[in-house]
Length: 239
Image (cartoon, rainbow, N blue to C red; front, side, top):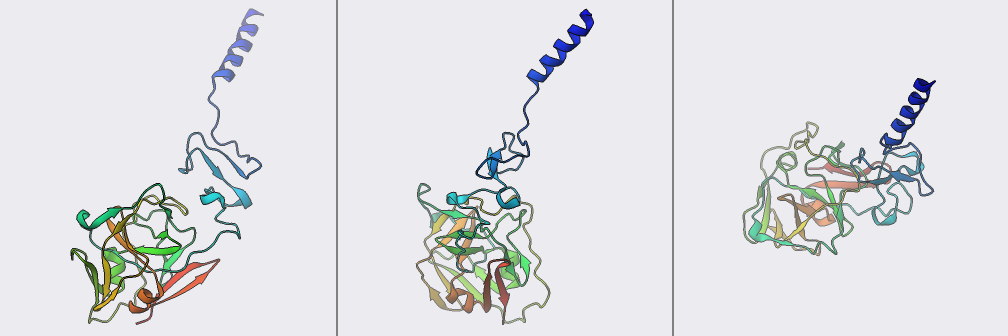
């Protein structure tokens, strides 16, 4: 009898000391739940509203909701790390930059992936693309990053490749809606001798320059763009 009582007490104590699970599988009235162990990588709380995968509500708006305002296309690419002397930090208290909540495709290949080291960024409702070697090579352009006044991009005389785009720099950790730390670069953009000094600045994130996918820049780089609420932003080489 004593052994039985001892066994019952022991089981009861084990139940009291067992750690609680961070993910119960249930959601609250807002469609989210706590994630105390941060298994999702999104912090201590995330959403599953609408049956979608774990995500955050940037600005209080679900990225899968019809209320979410899609950003306007923008173009950018980057190869080398920029000089810190030409980079001015933006006030982090007022900055609003994040990874897009939609695919960004170059000739049908998504560059806004969960493993992208330098994913696209949305800033001031404009999409920015990194000036990385793989993107610049695919666009068949050269890139001069160390000019003190301008980011210089020139078209090559060789014929552009017809092969599908193969993204590099895929050992990072990213997700749609992830906040991005950026800095403003005090340089203009020069493409084939034409200067572009728009209201949307060149930005820098993780020592890689990004530039805005405005209509003028997209056109000058020989690209066409298409936005669709289901497939996201598509960029295609036209030249």
